[in-house]
Length: 362
Length: 198
Picture (cartoon, rainbow over the protein chains, first blue to last red):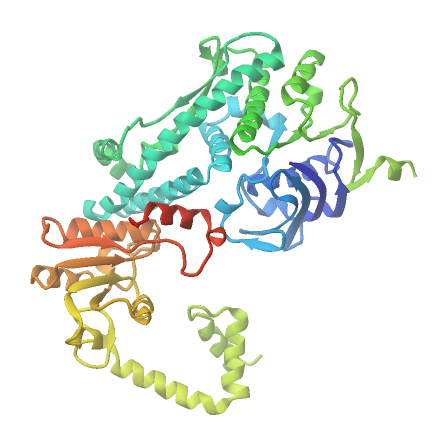
């Protein structure tokens, strides 16, 4: 897949812009706070209508405006030239693909893969389990509509059960929801186990290419409950009932799962150096790229938000080796890119206005 | 506009399916454009509200003691189709494909919306089952977590130990005359899972 044009209207600090991003390598150049990352954020919405910086819609809409809009024209392996319009209003997101509105997110998510590399990614390793679950869910849901459905059903059943626990409802009222919760939980656990295994296998290769050392990196799935079938999960819930009732919410299950990054058999969070940790999260994003490509057969777009500058020259060379020559890359930075094999099309960014080289010279 | 109009507008807006604009249109229509329709509508509503009540057995709306479908001697009373709402019942009736009787729950279990078993019309169904009036139950409830949970509740609480009653859920699949390419992923999945021997 390759993004050809991107229009953003009332998005973050961008009032209205239309940018030609059809080159193989596009570099958004500008000082901090000018709107480079905002455009990259808009581009990243194409995969799951989710921002890599926030879980809310409101901050994406320009201040004082009711709606924001992002339009894409792109070249797609299966669909050919495709146009997508995303309309964001507080609390709602509308998707149109080639003029037809998409009513279910499940029908859209993952068809247009992209991976964002951001300095914030270090939080995947250092931050809370919720961030890691979100990254994992997004990866798996984007390539598997069933996973997305299972995940939504699980969370719906969980909210229902938690409400019943809070209300002190009798067991008979809870049981039907627990049965559904158990069915979906077991499906989620199985899918996550397989998915993490595949991502971890790619992580080894990507880390090797990036860092040129063999430090046995690993992504480990730490399931909170390892029930093999729905009955086993139900009996686990039963054991936990008194605790759940006392706390008014479900204490065990896939919503408490975590992932562990490991290096040389040890937890990277505790034992890896700063450089190793940064290498690991970049390798994770690279592994995500491969996962998307392998599952969907569609080449994802690489969106690199100010991370290339953070890598030393040898890792930067490794990064390009791992990305390969065929994927489209859109990167941001405060300094022009130097020493990379790619021939960049530079777009200058100032105050939410985007101008390519020719216009900037004029 | 005027306090009297605003009041009508506000009340209409609270009705299901009417938003700000459509409530305004209905109010304008009845008050300004076609005031002659207002009185017949009001009296029809009042009359319906006075005469109609829930059938004590099936939960359907009726003017008589029992609903017309239940009172119809040609209908097979031992087969009961459980639906969430009266419009669901009407939709199945329009299909002409069903010759049994119904039971309307008037909703589905939904803890998040504060709907529990006591808020639904389960009791008359339990009575019919206990009295041996039912030998087949068809669950035509919505295909989401709450609809499925309601199916489980019926199975666990109303049919416990009743192996003599057969229970089934309606299939969820492709619309008639619709091509496969127009169906979304979830519908196709249901259609494949619910496939029949050919």
